[in-house]
Image (cartoon, rainbow, N blue to C red; front, side, top):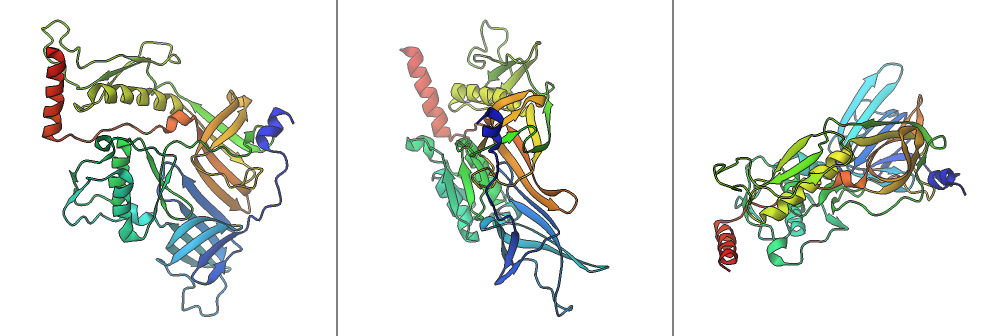
Length: 382
């Protein structure tokens, strides 16, 4: 088997691609138009479908907004959530459009109710479960490793601002652990690092790719990333006054001219480690996102019959885009079906490093600052 066939996977098995919306005990199929979108950088997943409705009593809606529903492709569930929108139009027939999102939509739309106004003193998974439990949403972890020491693993107590959503609170805390937050096909909230699973086949130009494009950018990349703790340079009249504020710069060899960029950490706790980690994140993320690929393929599945899945690696061979023999990450996928376009999947692919989560650290308590200063003073005296 040559490289292209190995990537694209040859002939696909006979796969059921019928899309079914289940509301209550009723299953709806026979859609005229379908769009289902899932991603590793979006929450919640959503869908929009259109059909010709057939009903006996025109005074009643067959589907009511707010009803629980599941959307499946064949026997595989892709969204577990709710009906958000039910739109009816009358012309040559009864045209209906239905839109909805996964169960995690409640985490994004609503405001967190925290009786004492504070969260923390627990790890990330426990905090996420605490915020998701009132909504009946489970928390699933994938390939994450929390710090082994209690001091690094436990999220410090912090105040919750009225109007913050559960998703905002979870996502902000997840950054402390470099963890992504999105939803899965069962409507669960997923805490995950960059995916390591790989699809059985991928995308090859001239085989299963209908169209593709890549945008190479230099305007958001820099030659040198300079990690610093603070944006203000103090005591410039003294020799080497800012030695404790500036650390080893990082170079991007792909940028041909002088383009310096200060990465300001604005953190005193765990300062040098976090500042250098943020500079590395800035370099990797900007380099990765400077070459995002958008492609449209002729199938919703890989050769093993698995739906294209966000946060999953996939082999790519697109020589016309100067991307031969790569293994990139699916960051976003939209399954579509229409009379004009047929059945297609539109995907966004990026290098895995483009999905690295921004490192962050919690604002320390005063006693932590004092301990850190005391430790530093002791080292200087020694």
